[in-house]
Amino acid sequence: MGYEWNFAAIYSNMGLLLEGAGLTLLLAVIAAVIGITLSIGGAVTVLWGRVWARRVVMAYVELIRNTPFIVQLFFIFFGLPSLGIKIPARTAASLAVVINLTAYGIEIMRAGIQSVSPGQREAAIALGIRPAVAFVMVVLPQAVATVYPALVSQIIITMLESAVVSQIAVTDLTHAADFIQSRSYRAFETYAVVALIYLAMALALRWVLGMIGRRYF
Image 1 (cartoon, rainbow, N blue to C red):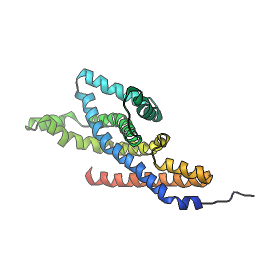
Image 2: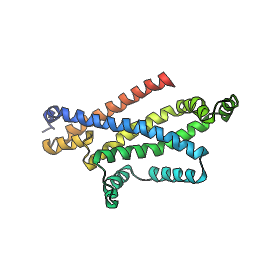
Image 3: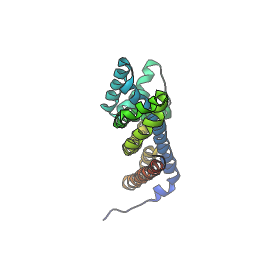
Image 4: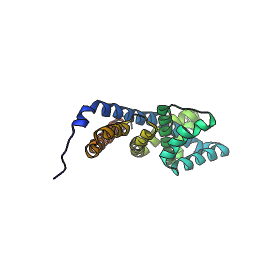
């Protein structure tokens, strides 16, 4: 006999899936807003900071980019309590996605800043504009516009990778799927629907960020 499809468990738990999807999107927004902001500061430090500060930032970038995200998450949630630092699951998940995105964002933003001709910043300073203001008003908008597609892709990758936060009992979309599957035993239908939800969220997020990019950059 062929496989008999049954989506009853999915339909009856759609609210749980939507709640999990909302938390997944929230983690992506937190990572994007805080992570990109920190990335700009990190890129500036790498380019113009003191030697010791550059080394600290670059060591951080290399550490995060060359270790698995799930290991970073487990270190925050399971490792830090050994030092007396207990962090709630959702806070740990938020911190992990921010730390991860920031490391990649620093390299992306550094490339964007370096793509802007130094003469533009120097010309702005020559006109009496303070260096910090010249950077924010002249260099930064052009840098962000140049690397904006890469930033969007990294935000989406971070959203998809955040599925591992279910391993520390954060009730994201994957956690909801695991809950439904463990009680319905309909693994194929459950994960097929969840895969489509992730796809829809990724496409929607790319579209929204694309609209923002066209509006401001």
